[in-house]
Length: 115
Length: 116
Image (cartoon, rainbow over all chains, first blue to last red):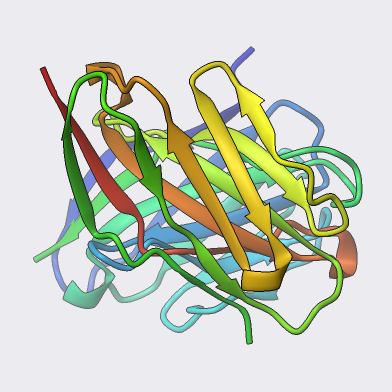
């Protein structure tokens, strides 16, 4: 049981380069999320998806784009990386309906450094 | 707007001591959900507990206990007889009830160090 898998685990980018982070979940969850974690600030929601083909902005969406072409995958793109996007990125997924007694499952994280 | 405050940035105690991590939240919703996650040095996020706003019953799980008080908007976490393996960053988080998605608002985290 893989759960939530993020690819890659580490990446170093030069300013202005682009890249895509891949998140895959095998739990058939409807909802998927991308967070970033910065020192002293906890995790902040970038974008999320409530189902295949849908995306929505979170708290800090600027500079990022996302796509959910398949239910099991949620891609996070950086079109022109900036040093301010140096962070640890976490993907998460959750089953339908928060009223159910469930929790979000997180991936292992991707450490991105923009130089 | 929702907000979670963990005022304790770092806590250091000696093994076997009891330690309480504070969490204060703000929300206008009457229905909401509170969570605690553990982030060990390896970096992953480990789910510890979920509490619904309509359930103020405190919970105990082994050496872990949680005190939820709506009157003070607090959801504190206590570790009894702490162990070195409890060393980690602990996050408190809040989610509103709308749309079914678990859009979590995290606190800043408390780094807990248990010294042998």
